[in-house]
Image (cartoon, rainbow, N blue to C red; front, top):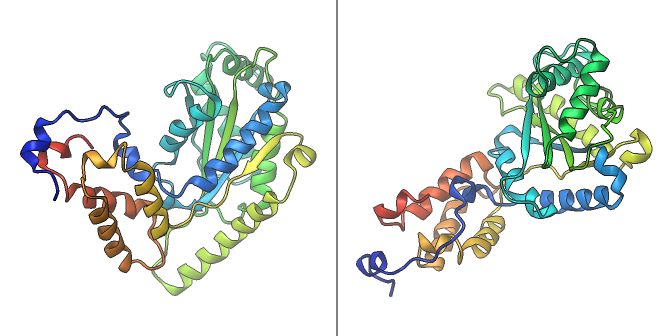
Length: 307
């Protein structure tokens, strides 16, 4: 029989490392984590690579990305044995991309705004040199992340934009001699959301397929040989299946979930009931709040503020 709430509230709870809202998103990212860890390990095997960026290409439906960057901040320090808070994330915003050079300009402009004082530089070459020097001054790993969306401009999407607009830009990056920390550059490619009409769905599938084919081709390449820069294409972010959630419960129950729900079997049964409605899987965006609601349904109101 489950322990009464009065007794539970009076007992000393175990001290655990809080994950907060990230807990609900630590599901079904093992494939991405394994590939990223392997790429980082191979990249750092040669000390000279610390001066060069490692390119990380990610793709998936836009509803699978919540909250991908927080997940990166959680897992990467453990891969390189750094303190959990020692990461610098730099977002590069993009506007309308009419040609490849537009993407180059957006990347330089955003990095300049965030890393360079206005009076420091004037020419493009000065900007690139100063950016590399300022990134090298960081005492912890740097992650630059750029998001592109298949709704942005279908005429440029695919091989040309990814290879010429993104990969070759960073392949030509001239690092500072002082660079000694891991430098990751993420391209987050988000596929269009589901459309309502038949013709909209057909157009969406065509554009998404074009981009997905490019990622499949890139996955087979040796980045270092073809582009003279290290890179990895991570497995596509996919819908979450029931077995993934069961694995998540098994991994996080004792240290994190048990403090909210004493009966693991009841929790697993509730998850089984949920997936009876979604036999083809659930997007990360939909699943996380549903999981939180399920766990809270077992929870005394005093514990709801802990999540």
